[in-house]
Image 1 (cartoon, rainbow, N blue to C red):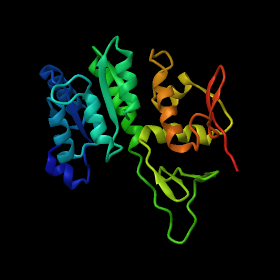
Image 2 (image 1 turned 90 degrees about the vertical axis):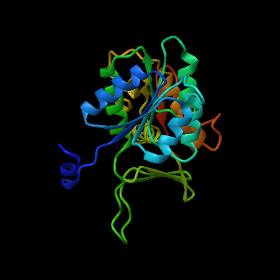
Image 3 (image 1 turned 180 degrees about the vertical axis):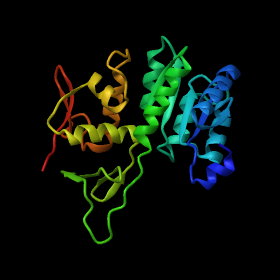
Image 4 (image 1 turned 180 degrees about the horizontal axis):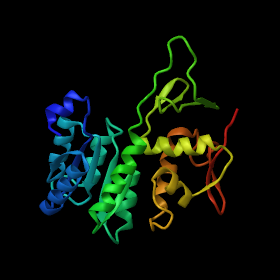
Length: 248
């Protein structure tokens, strides 16, 4: 389909920024992602990644951790100052600390190098599906549906927005999807593997460091709980995982 025909049909390709200092990886990912139907822009170092991001405003960012001029952590920090765009980091096989640091800074998921392009494509598809749900406007003059209030927190599942005392709390798409799963099933405990299957769309037999869930839970608590060290909303279910508890 030509760009002109695509525009006539009103279809807009989702745009992905691939930032990696290895030309072969950039070339492979650009080719594969374009074949899958995405528009792709690239950067070969961290500073260029920030510049390209600001100029193109992609729908998703794929970042290598180790890049010249500015590493993937620095790029994540810069992007997270103003945007909740989904970020997938590429990290070395044995370096758990790299993965955790990236997630703590706001990345939504990670893929371990060396990786298969097919695996990365699956992660891209899953993250975009969970983070690009369109906001639904409530009818004028009517009370919005799907609004959950617990304590001072208001969760609008239609608009995918969260408020504390009418002040909006910024959540990434994956943070909201995790919160939505727990809130819609208040009182039900989910294991980390179950959360990975429901929110990140990992298959049951996929081996993954479940700390990706722990880090996202920690991020949610820091944003929602009055005292994150003693949570009242997002509770740890001993021997199982996590659950949400509504409070009056």
